[in-house]
Each structure stands twice: as C-alpha cells, then as structure tokens.
Image 1: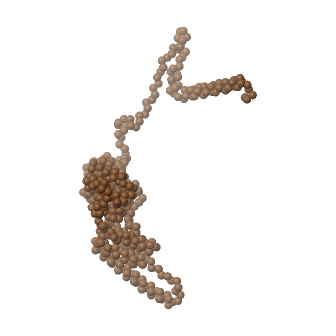
Image 2: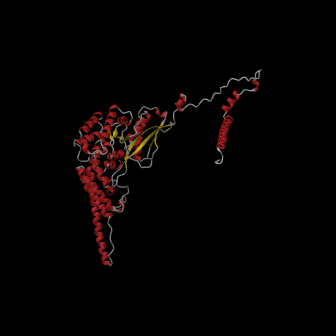
Image 3: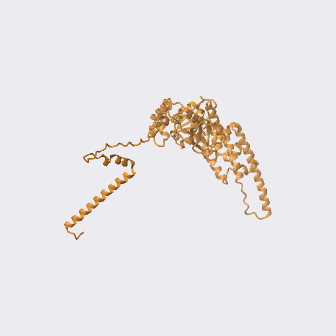
Length: 486
C-alpha cells in the first residue's frame, strides 16, 4: 500500500470501511434471526404483526392488522410475598437460643481449669420424649438435667403437643460432669417454652432444687476464669457463692473483674431475668453504665484507677441500680481496702488439696481396691519425675501461704509431710555400682532393709496425720467429695 498514490489509498480505505459495515449488519441480522427462531415471544409477535396477502384491499393495498399483545407469564412472588397461609407453615426444627454453661476439669498439680461450653436448645416436632440432652455427659450432670426438667414440668403445661426440646453442647468431645449445670439447663428450657430470647454472651453455674432455688457449687473461682476466657460479658453465680468472688480477687487480682460482670442469683426466675435480652430496665442500665466505665479505662486496669473519685462514683451508681452486681461490689471494696486478707476456709482447703492432689489423692479420693500401704502402685498418676512435681507443688503452696485461712495451716503441713514421704518412696533408687564382694552386698542389703523400714514408717505416720487433719476440718466426707467433683 505504500506504493499507492493518495487517491488509491483513499479507495482502499473506503472499501475496507464498507466491508466492516456490511459484516456488522450481517451479524445483527443473524442475531435477530436466531432470536426469532428460538424465542417464542418474538416469533409470535412477528407472526401476529406480519401482514398477509389475504389482507390486501381492492386497490392492492395491504390493510395492517391491529397488533396482538402477548402477555408474559406471571412472575413467581418473592418469599416475603407468599400468601399468608403458605408463609406461616411451622418449621419442624427451630433454634430457640443458647447459653454458656461452666464446668471444671479434674484437679491436678496445676489445680483445676475452668471451662465454658455453649448449650443450644432447639424446638423439634413433638414426640414421646418432651426434652432430651443429646450430648454424652457424666452421671452427675445427667442428674442435674433430670432435676431441671422436673422443675420445668411443674410449670404450666401444654407445649408438649406443639414441639419437643433438644439440648446439646457446642463442644461434644470434652468430658463434662458435675452437679452445677441444673440452673443453666432450666434457663435454656424455660426460654424455649416461653419464647424468650437469650443473650448469647451469658454464662451461668449453679445447682437447683425442685422449688427453683439456686444452690451453691464448688470451684467458682475457676469457673469465673472460664467465663472470661470464653469472652462472656455477664456471669451468673449462686448467691451463696458470693464470697468466692472475693477469693477470686485474692488469687487473680482486680483486673479480670472488668472483663465480665458477675451477678449473684438466688432463684431460677432471677437467673432468667438476667440471661434474657430484654432485661429489667435497672439491670440493663447497670450493665450499660459498667460497660461505659470500662470503655473509658485502659486495656489493663491497675488498682490505682480504682481510687479515682469518678470510678468510685460510677461503681456506686451501678450498685444502686443492681445491688447483686458482684463485680462492682468487689471493685468498690477493693478501692476502700475492705476485702478480706485471707481466702475462705473452703477455698483454702480446695487450693491445698488441688496443689498436692497427685501426692494425696489416695487419701482424699481412695480407690475401691487400694494396693498395699506405701506401695508405688498407689501413685500411678505421678510421672517418673517425682522430684520435679514435688518442687512445683511446694512452690505454689509457698505462694499461697500468706492468704490461706489460718484454720487450714494444719492441713497444709500434713499435705506437705505426706507428699514428701510419697516422693521419698517413689525416688528410692539403689546404686549398685562399686559393690563387688559378698560382704559388701550383705551390708548393702541390711542398710536398704533399714532404710525401707524407715520410709514405710514415715509414710504411715504422715498418712495418719493427714487423715486426722481432714477429720478436724470436717472435709474427709461429703464436703471433700463435693470439692473434688465440682
């Protein structure tokens, strides 16, 4: 093209343009034909609007027939526009809410660990079983569920003909047991029956009587820690466990109390009023004021902030609205230096036993078929490092000593002596190197016999003193079993 003159170039450009226009027109014609062939609405409209030769007039003109309107099929209404009778068909399964239940692991060298697991309640089609717990739990927790359902059955009936209730834990694999879940089970079932919306960030612990009274439980300090770890903003504990919040401050400090608002509960009705979304006006205002005060403080609230007049004034306002707000009460008393200086007796005993549990478990929780006295088979829970475990237990006891109840000191001394005797037996290893002739072997055997006899005597003496200390405190029976199983 570079050899063409100016006129030739213009001719070639015009031809190219005409070719492109023709190609575009052909594409449009083909697309129109394809749509008319495959779209029934376009083909019907074309047939209806096209004039025929039969419509020709006498003068050869064609009379145009009036256009025929084709109605499109009615559109399917949106779900929210369905007829009322279709929109109100009840579901066979519907979620009724959830709440956190608190429990603890078995005690050990590092003491108990508080855990939280969300409990879901679901309405299902009615069946022979009005309410069932589908997650596998221990014997004591099963008893708590049965007692909670017995209380629910005392309420106005009639809901069983409409639906049944299914309860299940979010965490299905961690072992769960203990008699402290009765209040939580009851709240969940009542909320489903009464169509009450539960706040999703509420944790609860507490046993229950058939009359709906909330009973005290053990390991509340650990359970509060479990609620904080689960980011629960409201925690409900039995009224008779209010002293445990002060124990919590002695062990953990005041800072964690800002992370969850702890309330005491005396009855199921009071617990439900605190667990629901539409709480009473004063309770709602108290929670809002405490949350607003917390938002104004730094991430880690040191005790110095408690002495601020503004903080003290706000805490008193919260207590005026909700006298059972244990977090505000403990923080206010801590600022005024009015908290106890020692743990409660039950918590002191709990801490001592939990710390030394690997060494004293055969006394506080004896097996059904105990092995012979001073036998190493009694202490299978201890690893091959008894010195390390003994040292860890002693370090923790030394830390706890300044805040232990004075009445528990005898138990602490007895536990230390028994743990030491147990460690001596487990650490007894004879070095046979360097012995060559029969006289040396006989001397070694005689010395070992005397040493083993002394170890057995010390062990039996320490065991007797420990059992005596437990009896003096009245914790060798029901109370001790309650401390260990909560």
